[in-house]
Length: 252
Image 1 (tube, rainbow, N blue to C red):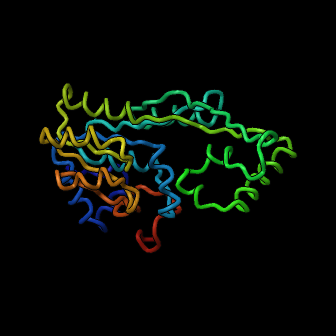
Image 2 (image 1 turned 90 degrees about the vertical axis):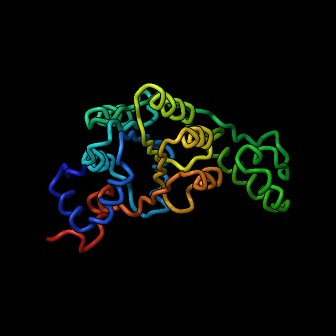
Protein backbone atom coordinates (compact mmCIF):
# COMPACT_ATOMS: atom_id res chain seq x y z
CA UNK A 1 0.00 0.00 0.00
CA UNK A 2 1.16 3.54 -0.81
CA UNK A 3 0.75 6.30 1.75
CA UNK A 4 2.73 9.47 0.87
CA UNK A 5 5.01 10.68 3.64
CA UNK A 6 5.09 14.32 2.53
CA UNK A 7 2.73 16.74 0.82
CA UNK A 8 5.09 17.00 -2.15
CA UNK A 9 5.09 13.23 -2.62
CA UNK A 10 1.29 13.30 -2.44
CA UNK A 11 1.07 15.90 -5.21
CA UNK A 12 3.56 14.04 -7.35
CA UNK A 13 1.80 10.72 -6.81
CA UNK A 14 -1.44 12.22 -8.10
CA UNK A 15 0.31 13.45 -11.24
CA UNK A 16 2.28 10.22 -11.76
CA UNK A 17 -0.24 7.69 -10.51
CA UNK A 18 0.84 5.16 -13.16
CA UNK A 19 4.34 5.07 -11.67
CA UNK A 20 2.97 4.54 -8.17
CA UNK A 21 0.80 1.66 -9.37
CA UNK A 22 3.80 0.11 -11.13
CA UNK A 23 5.88 0.28 -7.95
CA UNK A 24 3.07 -1.05 -5.77
CA UNK A 25 3.04 -4.15 -7.95
CA UNK A 26 6.81 -4.52 -7.62
CA UNK A 27 6.64 -4.07 -3.83
CA UNK A 28 3.64 -6.35 -3.43
CA UNK A 29 5.28 -8.54 -0.77
CA UNK A 30 7.90 -8.09 1.96
CA UNK A 31 10.62 -5.99 0.31
CA UNK A 32 14.18 -4.96 1.17
CA UNK A 33 16.19 -2.28 -0.62
CA UNK A 34 19.98 -2.43 -1.14
CA UNK A 35 21.68 0.76 -2.37
CA UNK A 36 25.26 0.53 -3.62
CA UNK A 37 26.00 4.25 -3.28
CA UNK A 38 29.36 4.15 -5.04
CA UNK A 39 27.56 2.73 -8.06
CA UNK A 40 24.57 5.09 -7.86
CA UNK A 41 26.43 8.37 -7.34
CA UNK A 42 28.10 8.45 -10.82
CA UNK A 43 24.71 8.04 -12.51
CA UNK A 44 24.20 11.80 -12.09
CA UNK A 45 26.70 12.41 -14.90
CA UNK A 46 24.64 10.32 -17.29
CA UNK A 47 21.22 11.41 -16.02
CA UNK A 48 21.86 15.11 -15.64
CA UNK A 49 20.26 15.06 -12.18
CA UNK A 50 21.13 13.76 -8.71
CA UNK A 51 19.52 11.28 -6.33
CA UNK A 52 18.62 13.10 -3.11
CA UNK A 53 19.01 10.51 -0.37
CA UNK A 54 16.62 12.38 1.95
CA UNK A 55 13.85 12.51 -0.66
CA UNK A 56 14.57 8.92 -1.71
CA UNK A 57 14.04 7.66 1.84
CA UNK A 58 10.80 9.63 2.21
CA UNK A 59 9.58 8.14 -1.06
CA UNK A 60 10.50 4.56 -0.19
CA UNK A 61 8.96 4.92 3.27
CA UNK A 62 5.66 5.65 1.55
CA UNK A 63 5.39 1.99 0.53
CA UNK A 64 4.23 -0.10 3.46
CA UNK A 65 5.76 -3.39 2.27
CA UNK A 66 9.31 -2.05 2.30
CA UNK A 67 10.78 -3.44 5.51
CA UNK A 68 14.34 -2.17 5.30
CA UNK A 69 16.40 0.22 3.18
CA UNK A 70 20.10 -0.57 3.43
CA UNK A 71 22.69 1.82 2.05
CA UNK A 72 26.34 0.92 1.57
CA UNK A 73 28.73 3.87 1.67
CA UNK A 74 32.35 4.29 2.68
CA UNK A 75 33.56 6.65 5.40
CA UNK A 76 36.59 8.81 4.81
CA UNK A 77 37.98 8.77 8.34
CA UNK A 78 38.96 12.17 9.64
CA UNK A 79 36.86 13.95 7.02
CA UNK A 80 34.11 15.82 8.86
CA UNK A 81 31.72 15.99 5.91
CA UNK A 82 32.02 12.27 5.22
CA UNK A 83 31.49 11.32 8.87
CA UNK A 84 28.56 13.75 9.22
CA UNK A 85 26.93 12.24 6.11
CA UNK A 86 27.00 8.78 7.66
CA UNK A 87 25.36 10.13 10.82
CA UNK A 88 22.71 11.90 8.74
CA UNK A 89 21.89 8.68 6.88
CA UNK A 90 21.38 6.95 10.23
CA UNK A 91 19.06 9.76 11.35
CA UNK A 92 17.02 9.43 8.15
CA UNK A 93 16.26 5.81 8.99
CA UNK A 94 18.59 4.05 6.59
CA UNK A 95 20.29 0.86 7.71
CA UNK A 96 23.82 2.11 7.09
CA UNK A 97 26.61 -0.29 6.20
CA UNK A 98 29.98 1.47 6.12
CA UNK A 99 33.70 0.88 6.42
CA UNK A 100 36.79 3.06 6.04
CA UNK A 101 37.70 4.23 2.56
CA UNK A 102 41.15 3.00 1.57
CA UNK A 103 43.44 5.69 0.20
CA UNK A 104 45.79 4.14 -2.33
CA UNK A 105 48.79 6.24 -3.37
CA UNK A 106 49.62 5.68 -7.02
CA UNK A 107 53.08 6.79 -8.14
CA UNK A 108 53.32 8.97 -11.24
CA UNK A 109 57.09 9.42 -11.04
CA UNK A 110 58.54 9.19 -14.57
CA UNK A 111 62.15 9.95 -13.61
CA UNK A 112 63.28 6.39 -14.37
CA UNK A 113 60.94 5.73 -17.32
CA UNK A 114 61.78 6.25 -20.98
CA UNK A 115 59.61 8.88 -22.65
CA UNK A 116 58.16 6.30 -25.06
CA UNK A 117 57.61 3.60 -22.43
CA UNK A 118 54.01 2.60 -21.61
CA UNK A 119 55.01 1.14 -18.21
CA UNK A 120 53.47 3.92 -16.10
CA UNK A 121 50.43 4.32 -18.33
CA UNK A 122 49.71 0.61 -17.84
CA UNK A 123 48.61 1.44 -14.28
CA UNK A 124 45.89 3.82 -15.43
CA UNK A 125 44.84 2.80 -18.95
CA UNK A 126 43.49 -0.60 -19.96
CA UNK A 127 45.91 -2.52 -22.17
CA UNK A 128 43.36 -3.01 -24.95
CA UNK A 129 43.18 0.78 -25.32
CA UNK A 130 46.85 1.46 -24.66
CA UNK A 131 47.79 -0.84 -27.55
CA UNK A 132 45.96 1.56 -29.88
CA UNK A 133 48.16 4.49 -28.92
CA UNK A 134 51.09 5.40 -31.15
CA UNK A 135 54.50 6.36 -29.71
CA UNK A 136 53.74 10.07 -30.04
CA UNK A 137 50.66 9.70 -27.82
CA UNK A 138 52.58 7.72 -25.19
CA UNK A 139 55.37 10.29 -25.25
CA UNK A 140 52.85 13.13 -24.89
CA UNK A 141 51.13 11.52 -21.88
CA UNK A 142 54.46 10.78 -20.21
CA UNK A 143 55.31 14.41 -20.78
CA UNK A 144 52.20 15.40 -18.82
CA UNK A 145 53.36 13.22 -15.94
CA UNK A 146 56.74 14.94 -16.13
CA UNK A 147 55.07 18.35 -15.89
CA UNK A 148 53.26 17.19 -12.75
CA UNK A 149 56.56 15.95 -11.29
CA UNK A 150 58.14 19.33 -12.00
CA UNK A 151 55.30 20.89 -10.00
CA UNK A 152 56.08 18.62 -7.05
CA UNK A 153 53.39 16.01 -7.69
CA UNK A 154 54.78 12.48 -7.66
CA UNK A 155 51.67 10.46 -6.75
CA UNK A 156 47.90 10.65 -6.89
CA UNK A 157 45.38 9.31 -4.39
CA UNK A 158 42.92 6.64 -5.49
CA UNK A 159 39.99 6.02 -3.13
CA UNK A 160 38.76 2.44 -2.82
CA UNK A 161 35.74 1.09 -0.93
CA UNK A 162 33.88 -1.81 -2.48
CA UNK A 163 30.75 -3.35 -0.92
CA UNK A 164 29.92 -6.06 -3.47
CA UNK A 165 30.65 -8.89 -1.03
CA UNK A 166 28.68 -7.28 1.80
CA UNK A 167 25.65 -6.56 -0.36
CA UNK A 168 25.54 -10.03 -1.88
CA UNK A 169 25.92 -11.59 1.59
CA UNK A 170 23.17 -9.43 3.10
CA UNK A 171 20.74 -10.30 0.32
CA UNK A 172 21.26 -14.01 0.87
CA UNK A 173 21.08 -13.68 4.68
CA UNK A 174 17.82 -11.73 4.39
CA UNK A 175 16.46 -14.49 2.21
CA UNK A 176 17.45 -17.26 4.61
CA UNK A 177 16.56 -15.58 7.92
CA UNK A 178 14.32 -12.57 7.45
CA UNK A 179 11.53 -13.82 5.19
CA UNK A 180 12.12 -11.28 2.43
CA UNK A 181 10.27 -11.95 -0.82
CA UNK A 182 11.36 -9.04 -3.02
CA UNK A 183 14.95 -7.82 -3.30
CA UNK A 184 15.51 -4.37 -4.81
CA UNK A 185 19.11 -3.67 -5.79
CA UNK A 186 20.28 -0.20 -6.75
CA UNK A 187 23.30 -1.09 -8.86
CA UNK A 188 24.23 -2.33 -12.30
CA UNK A 189 27.47 -4.03 -11.32
CA UNK A 190 28.22 -7.43 -12.83
CA UNK A 191 29.57 -8.67 -9.47
CA UNK A 192 25.98 -9.11 -8.29
CA UNK A 193 25.06 -11.57 -11.02
CA UNK A 194 25.68 -14.67 -8.87
CA UNK A 195 23.54 -13.74 -5.80
CA UNK A 196 20.81 -12.35 -8.06
CA UNK A 197 20.75 -15.55 -10.11
CA UNK A 198 20.60 -17.63 -6.94
CA UNK A 199 17.64 -15.65 -5.62
CA UNK A 200 15.82 -15.92 -8.93
CA UNK A 201 16.50 -19.65 -8.98
CA UNK A 202 14.80 -19.88 -5.57
CA UNK A 203 11.72 -18.12 -6.97
CA UNK A 204 12.36 -14.79 -5.31
CA UNK A 205 11.56 -11.51 -7.02
CA UNK A 206 14.61 -9.38 -7.78
CA UNK A 207 14.27 -5.83 -9.10
CA UNK A 208 17.21 -3.83 -10.38
CA UNK A 209 16.89 -0.05 -10.12
CA UNK A 210 19.32 1.47 -12.59
CA UNK A 211 19.64 3.76 -15.57
CA UNK A 212 19.85 2.91 -19.24
CA UNK A 213 23.21 1.60 -20.46
CA UNK A 214 24.48 1.35 -16.88
CA UNK A 215 23.52 -2.30 -16.41
CA UNK A 216 26.16 -4.95 -16.98
CA UNK A 217 25.59 -7.60 -19.62
CA UNK A 218 25.72 -10.28 -16.92
CA UNK A 219 22.75 -8.74 -15.13
CA UNK A 220 20.83 -7.83 -18.29
CA UNK A 221 20.96 -11.47 -19.37
CA UNK A 222 19.15 -12.47 -16.18
CA UNK A 223 15.94 -10.88 -17.44
CA UNK A 224 15.33 -14.21 -19.15
CA UNK A 225 15.24 -15.75 -15.66
CA UNK A 226 12.86 -13.17 -14.22
CA UNK A 227 15.01 -10.18 -13.25
CA UNK A 228 13.02 -6.94 -13.46
CA UNK A 229 14.96 -3.82 -14.48
CA UNK A 230 13.34 -0.54 -13.46
CA UNK A 231 14.66 2.67 -15.03
CA UNK A 232 15.03 5.29 -12.29
CA UNK A 233 14.24 8.01 -14.83
CA UNK A 234 10.63 7.04 -14.17
CA UNK A 235 10.83 8.36 -10.60
CA UNK A 236 13.09 11.35 -11.18
CA UNK A 237 10.73 13.94 -9.75
CA UNK A 238 10.19 11.90 -6.58
CA UNK A 239 13.88 11.44 -5.75
CA UNK A 240 15.97 14.14 -7.43
CA UNK A 241 17.28 17.29 -5.80
CA UNK A 242 14.43 19.73 -5.19
CA UNK A 243 15.86 22.28 -7.64
CA UNK A 244 16.02 19.57 -10.33
CA UNK A 245 12.30 18.70 -10.31
CA UNK A 246 11.14 19.10 -13.89
CA UNK A 247 9.30 22.34 -14.75
CA UNK A 248 5.50 22.43 -14.62
CA UNK A 249 5.36 19.17 -12.63
CA UNK A 250 4.09 20.83 -9.44
CA UNK A 251 1.71 23.76 -9.08
CA UNK A 252 3.25 27.12 -8.15
